[in-house]
Length: 274
Length: 296
Image (cartoon, rainbow over all chains, first blue to last red; front, side, top):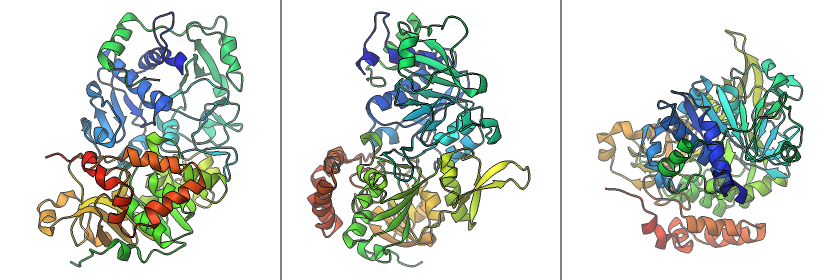
């Protein structure tokens, strides 16, 4: 974890780099789904980096981008709560708070969302995600939380972005339980299932960024500055496809991006603490 | 209109072992915990639970060995991690689970509310939720377009238990103007067969009548309404009080082993005879003023 928050020789943290990579993927007027997350590192990955990236995009190329968070449409990201106790969420100002979450489900199912963010205990070669159970489903070695709306994200959202740390336990050849469907499940290509959305677009980690290439297999898109391909491959349970020729380096944050992150968006550093 | 205001004991008396219960609330918010403690006190077992994002309600029932099966979108402890007792129950094979996505569980409750046996969804195509649950998730073709769909079975519960904000003696339950709406309590209520609602406060019927658009659960749907102030403790009732972090930590400390969790249940659930006694025993009573978030 310390590597994530340390400011490296290049002058930015891995979390700042991830937020900038994601922010550049957001277009003006995008509707962005951010989950509620938990605490510690899981909070940073599921909530902190996505909300920071959304705000950065709003302040740069995407002033019309909006976020759906909890059951709030367009919460005021210029006034993020400094804690996650219930009342801070209850009173967070927003444009809309639909009467129940069923409305959000309908918006998902009608493909109204452009971008979503995904955490997972397991991610496999084809971008299938598991947040449900490790081991055999009926009597698992680790029972996780369930499914939430993540299946809908991968089924319906235009550009789902997976945000996880690169780790052999997470990046597995085949997830134990397919909570959310990627580009191929046990040999069956996504196109045969009849899902309307295109499936996962990017995997942003603390070491590298991946996309999905031919046949929907995960492909190394860029290495973060100072990270070697060997290091990345040693942290994965399968070998991703590699780009032709030299592997690009993830574009570092600019001075302007870093200034916005540190001085405007999150000056007290609550969003990406770990 | 008929008076439906009864005691917690009387409201829950019809709930017997083996029942299927739909339980309202979401995450650390409006879990009907006082009702759950009453069921544990009575020794009700062998329950099937249908939930949205559940935390303490399901985890306490799991700790008491009262859960046979769970169906829902999430069972955990939100910012406090996984649900330890539920997790042990599933990992030991004692609790059978059937997972659903948010669209799928909404569809199941909408089917129940509409009096239909199923509702179609597209969300589960290719997912193991479907492959592992052929009884409740069945492939079907759209009769108009031929598109691939799943039929998901209606969420038919014997009893539905919800913790609400305020209501009158006739069972009309109202929500405040500013609240956290990230749940499906109203939908669950509309599809209920026998609906039991605990509320923070009983208010005069005159007050309800002045603002009928705030009534999200009409009395016609309700079998029993009970006044249980702080009935969601140790979780929050949005707009009224925050979650009790101190008690949640105490709960999770006890939840580390089945033995210590057993002592928790004895001390805080089975020994107190009433909800008031629970609030005293749990130390909540002393902390209530600091947990209040009421404005104006």
